[in-house]
Length: 369
Image (cartoon, rainbow, N blue to C red; front, side, top):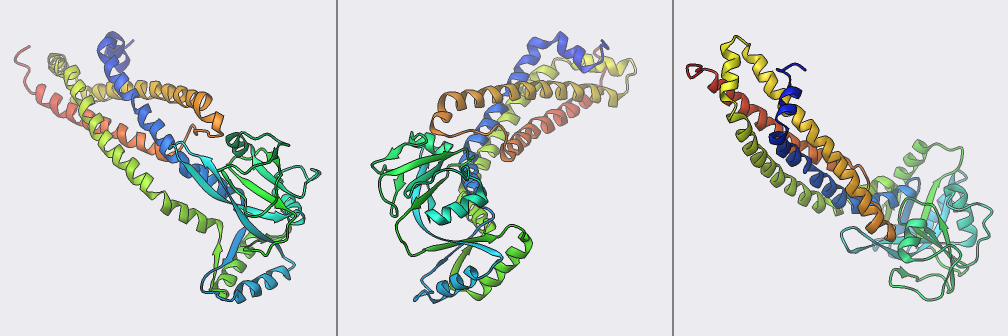
C-alpha cells in the first residue's frame, strides 16, 4: 500500500479516525428524522394518487339554488366520452407517525356505480359478489381499524363517520398502498359530488382541457383535479418543512463545529509530518490532495455506516411499531436525502478548507525539522 495514500493513514490511525467516522455516521439520525416527518405528507399523497385520474366537483355557497351543479351534471352525464359518478361522502381516519389521527373523505357509491368505478380502478376482483351495504378498505386501513375481509361492522367506531349507508356494513379489503376507504349503499341519495374521468379509448390531455373549459363556464362550482389536491396538501404541510429545515440548519452548524474540533485534534499533531513532505520536495498541491482524500475517505466510511444504521432503524421501527397500525416508514425520501447532503457539506467544506489553510501556514516554516 502506498504510504502516501489516504487508506494507509486511516489503516494505521484507525483508533483516532474512528471518532470522526462515528460522528459522520450520526447523519443517520437526520435521515431517519426526515423520513419520520415527511411520512404524514407521503401518506396523504398516496391517497390522492389513487384517484388521480378523476376530477371532483361540488356546489359552493355562490351556487345558491344548485343551478350550475344541475346543469353541469346534465352536461357531463350526456357526454359519451366521460365516465360520471354521483357520490356523497362519509369520513374515515387513520393513524399518523406523528401520533395524531388524520381524516379523509370517503366517497359513497350506489352499488351499480361502484361496479363501474371498480371496473376502472381494479380495486377488487370484478367477479366479487358485492353486498348492498359495504365498506371497501385498503389493507393498510383495515389493519389500522383491526378489521378483516368479510367481517361485518355492527357498530360504527370513532374512526368511521357513516352518514350514508346502513348497518351492518360488510368489510371488503384490497391490497392498496394508501389508507383508503370507499362505501357502497343501497340507499337513495342526492349526489353532493360528481366524479368524472375519461372513458377507455379517450385521451388524458383532451380530458383535462375539457375540465378547464368546464371550470371556466361553471365558475360557481369547486373543481378539484389531482394537481389542485397536491397544491392544497403542500400548503397544509408547509409548516412541517419549515420545522424540519430549521432543525437541519441547526444540526448542520452543530455537525460542522463538532467534527471540525475533532479534525483540529487529528491534523494539528501532524504539523511536522506535512512540513517534512514539503521539505523533501513534495508538491504542495499533492499534500493538499492527500489531506482531502483522507477526509473524503473518512466521510465515505461514515456515510456507509450511516446507511447501515438507517436501514436497520427503519426496518426495526416498521417491524415492531408501525406495521401493526398499517403505517410504513419509507426507506427513501428526497427531502431526507437532501437534508443529509446539506449536513454532510457542512462537515466537508469547512473541514477541508480549514485544513488547507492550516497546512499552508505550517509548511511555510520547516526550520524546526
